[in-house]
Amino acid sequence: MISQIVTLVGVLIGALTSYLATASAERARHRRTLETRWDERKLATYIEYMALVKEAQRAAKEAWASPEDCTRALATMEAAEGKRSLAFESLVLLAHPSAIEAAHEVNRALWRVIVQARELSTVALPTPEVIHALNVLHQEARRDLGIDDAQFATAGP
Image 1 (cartoon, rainbow, N blue to C red):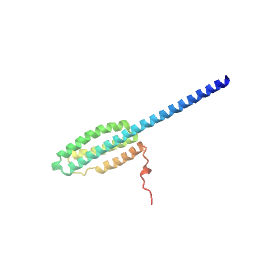
Image 2 (cartoon, rainbow, N blue to C red):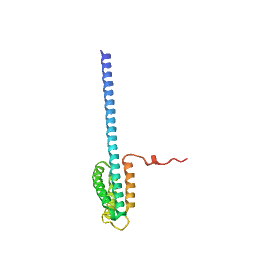
Image 3 (cartoon, one colour):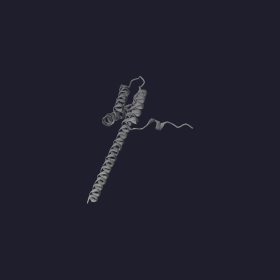
Image 4 (cartoon, rainbow, N blue to C red):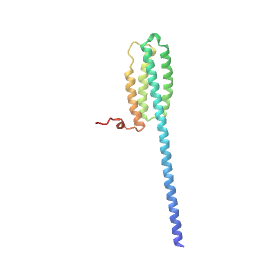
């Protein structure tokens, strides 16, 4: 009888161990799936935001370059700016705080370009500021997504 009880206890311990191991593995798999899903959403948000920044900047440059025929370019710039503003809200919800701060810098630099384009200023547009701010945002986005900069380093001969 004791041997049967020992066998039964062994089976119960084995079943419990198997259940706990399986549950733990399932939780880890589910966590990885969620992380991947959020990373994909983050990446899409970063791409959308940066594309709209570039579209607004490009249209501002076009309006500034030919002020006599700038109606279409200014309309494109305003539309891109509206979409960029909405994309920024998604970025704020999903991104790491350092990437959000970098995006704020992009916004400030872009707004200076937009104001000058609206006023058809004769002063050169501060587009290098936007480019620099975007480069900082690219770096922060890669960090947020866990992309190692060393992966992009070129290997020597």
